[in-house]
Length: 225
Image (cartoon, rainbow, N blue to C red; front, side, top):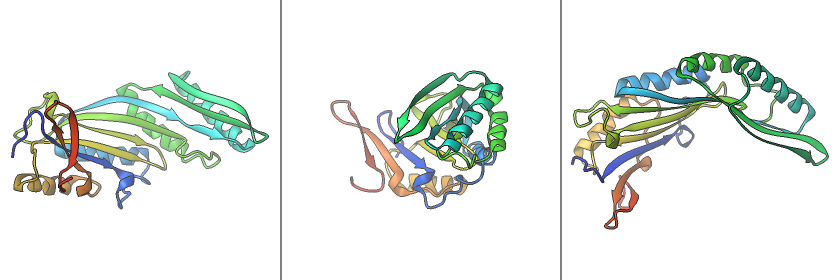
């Protein structure tokens, strides 16, 4: 059954929810390439949005605090002062404490080189917080399907990811052209699975509906819930 403007099937994927953690140990560059290859196979008009370099510092031990300050200075030397920072410092259990989350907005041109730089920093073993440095990015795209018109906001899909040397996550919000679980939808899911780098889980498929009051709600696609 084809979708109406009010009924859509979405698939939400988080790699941490899957038994196959195939993105988590590949490093930033390799994980990005896995995601990019996947999108090139299933989508058109892929737009990369809001790449951001993020540093998470949360340390209480002398060695960790010293290393945090060193890494922060490395990033400042390379990228300038952070675009945004949230932080707090206080005496905690008679120890010095640093909690700081600076981020740097990147251009699309800087994105891939920054992934290489982040991998070059490695996992930063002297830091307790994981992942201490990562790059976040989102993609908008339209699935390769005859019922989907690229540029139509109603049929736009998206993917958000963050890439680091030691912990990578991708979340997929997928708009399909089917409003109910039917033979067409099951065929679509099977074809999509062939390209998806992580197994699709039925429990993560949701149908967006509108009630009589026009309010949005979701139900599982494969159950009566």
